[in-house]
Image (cartoon, rainbow, N blue to C red; front, side, top):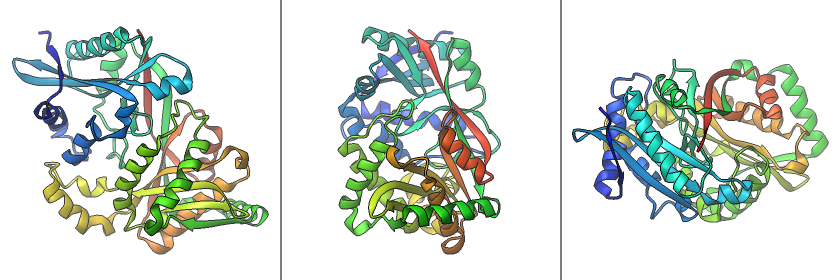
Length: 374
């Protein structure tokens, strides 16, 4: 039976949109339930600054009043300006294992984008390249790390059967400390520190506004040429900074700026994998979620290397190796962190893939971004 698809606008429907996650994943042992409050903020078009330069329409699929799927159609005008294309996006896709339902959702998103002049539908983007992107296609035997996507394996068939084709793969590497700091890495980073006079300074949470300004410039320079990259606006970085501030507080040594001869040239940010804690919060409610976070943060033994980059004029000098080494050393000496996930890394980012391999990183998950010609 073909489902009915309708656009949603009300807060109550947005709650149903978010709540549908629990229908799909409630029996999945690897799923880490997000905080419902965070999911609501992500799709809040009044408060999330992303939507100041983007259009987004959420849709629900229903059969006899029961939700069977959801999707968002998104136009990121900054992406189109930066890349000079007419790509639109789909995101927040969730669906029962029914090709007819999936096709109806994709048809609806495609029609919405086509009517607004887009010639390609790309995704999943939830909702942008600076948030959660990609479909998990390899690595279903472990839970997702914080701010990485997760989905049932059958989504691959639902998407590919509709006619989507691969646009790009993104990799996640698992770095275990005992294997990471090799004699070669020790030599390389020591030589780089001396040759380029590298110093590192932690982000100062008491002067966060100042340091956010430095990070903003580094981030937009370092990632400018990456596939799909869209510079973040001041508001977006400030918005993200306030969110991350609460996560960084217990682990202040995992956010730092790299300097060469006193000039800021790189930035690294690792976030503790709070999914390890949130897995216990089956309901996704703020309470008891906050309790689990307060009591469980110190037990987390994995961090995600969320951001690590060097501005173009200082790349290929080994400064990234210094930062990787420093993260591993801080994890070993200051915290009970046993491993890190470097994610995501573009499949054709030669430098970052080589750096992960230099540290004996295991490529253990792959995420895929798809395109569909409209």
